[in-house]
Length: 301
Image 1 (spheres, rainbow, N blue to C red):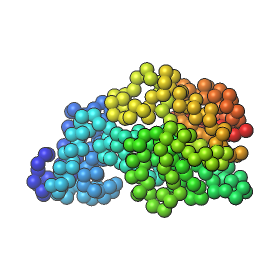
Image 2 (spheres, rainbow, N blue to C red):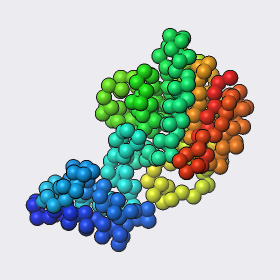
Image 3 (tube, rainbow, N blue to C red):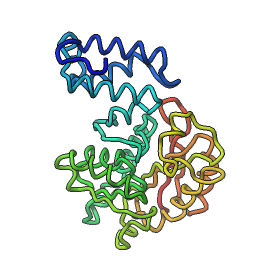
Image 4 (cartoon, one colour):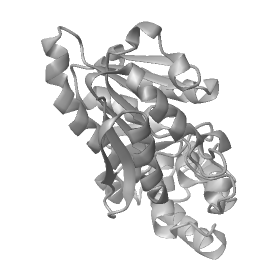
């Protein structure tokens, strides 16, 4: 309801309008009920149960303007997460925009796997008198690195990315993290080049959600047209970056250290072979909640 004077329209009316317009002309990936609720929550400042209580309150002029802008962006096909400017990931509420990939549930599963591996190796680090060290390669929004730091309070985390724009987003998320932010360092560079050389041989967990889409693969328009290509595509078979990470991992891992790398389900067999060729041991494939192959897990020999 563009230009509606303050106090003349309720949030309930705006939600109904959003549902109707998204149902009539929304993008193919739109869920009109979900999208409308999220947009009204963001514009009104009401969240969860608060929205139920506030639906009949009059919308402010500023709120109506914000609502109109978000709804128009969504109608043009922009992903809901970018429209809202934030998205939940595990315990975090992350700032996201088109400079970074949208955090996905599959990657939350990868963090579960990574934390289990980290818990296994933490005692060895403590026995050596070291602070346990985690490296998140290609951090993007910082979703993995920040989650590890928040959920394991005794570790130091390095988060790298070759994209300065992605690191700007990660820094914004780091600024709102609280005390855990003091244990995270963000560095710019291509994969291991971003790390100081004295970390070699001391990393207890290497974790990454690298690009793993093959150059010729078809993607949904909402992904292809909006998310950063550099964080999606990785050569003719989608394995260029995974090859690099797996091959160099042994140099950086501590004696009890683990590597956890997100991948596409059809890349599992090749990833296991890469781990074996690199001299990593106990290699296996972890599955996501849908039972699909989702991450390579391997350990230093």
